[in-house]
Image (cartoon, rainbow, N blue to C red; front, side):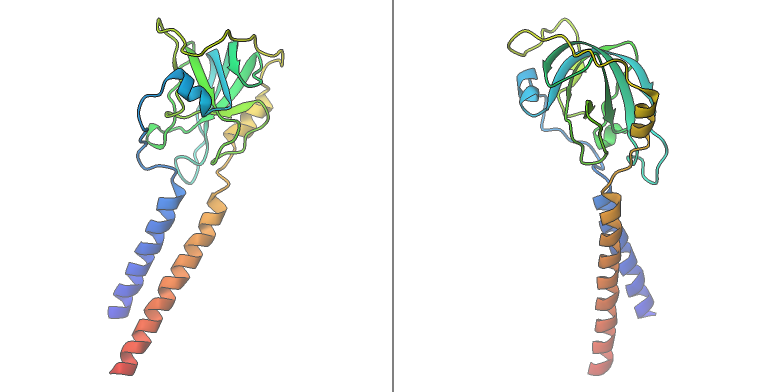
Length: 201
């Protein structure tokens, strides 16, 4: 009976470790509002654009396995090689730092060319709640210098949209091995303690 309880405890511990590492954030917490110039210094691209398409994430094993895909028509570029139409990905959940875009709304977007959770093609960017992205309003853009026009790259293809919608976090595979390793270690520890207890008795 004691061994069974220990085994159950081991399973709970191992599962907790994996679920904790598998989720990018159980509750998104930003350091605080950042200025446009601060956001510019920590991202690879900054541009103004209007959302023309919004594709909801596919259902995965975890809520953040697949990203939302947003397509914007770009009007002005402050940093990065940004085309006249650009695709960005973001987590489908605000709790995991996803940014909530809306079709027909104009944004000042700050994005990164690499993502720790999804595979991005050239010209695509990862955007999060803490990136500094915001709706354009009467508040002036706080970036020095005049913006440039976007590159003439054409429209985002349906194939590229589908590939990014199907992009799965690459870190899921290492986490599976972490789960196996932790579980095996705990089971071995339980067996050793049981054996040691019988020896002492």
